[in-house]
Image 1: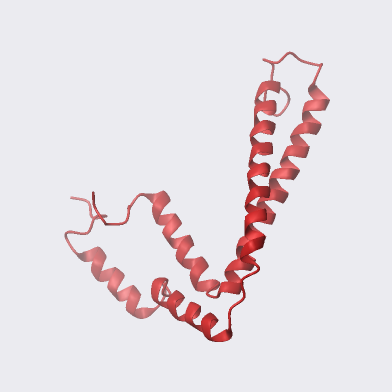
Image 2: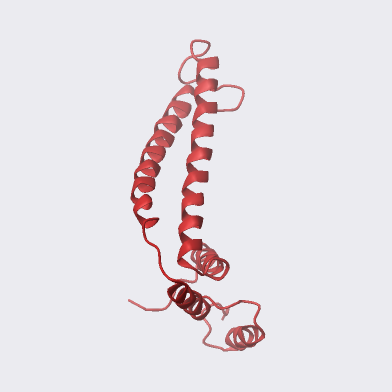
Length: 150
């Protein structure tokens, strides 16, 4: 097993997003707020879509059999399955929210927040920094580069 990071597009997108979030929110307080907002937005969106699907189900229920599709191309069974899955997601998000409330109990001094900023700069440097751009260009010119085509 290799210690090299995966080079697939999904993993690369994750690494970029991970580093961006560290760069843009480099303190404990900012990370707390970011994660709270993320969970809340996820719950809001899932809840709204669940409500919309339930309304659609009520509108088409009884008008067609379970194998038929409605005007949006979804069968009643598909809609019911999606509602069940979204309700499960919302239940998980409520659990995560309860756990995250404990994270907000943690407060640190400005000295510790500055350490967060320092470490964030080390583990997720600015991708547009000239030194990083030069290193990336050199890396991509190297013949042993994993993204080079043979």
